[in-house]
Length: 78
Image (tube, rainbow, N blue to C red):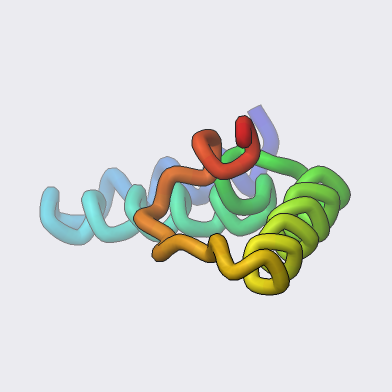
């Protein structure tokens, strides 16, 4: 275990339970930012973003655009 990790563990152990939960949430937030949205790496996210943009533009031109309901997998499968 690295010295930084050991220091974080020691600091967390000194905190009350509620504050430890906040530290854990923040660490998860940082990890999520480093891994990208939806578990994709930055290059994968750019690729998916381009695909979605192209599909949206095509649908707008054809007049078949739909409201997005948050299901990326369904849109990419079309």
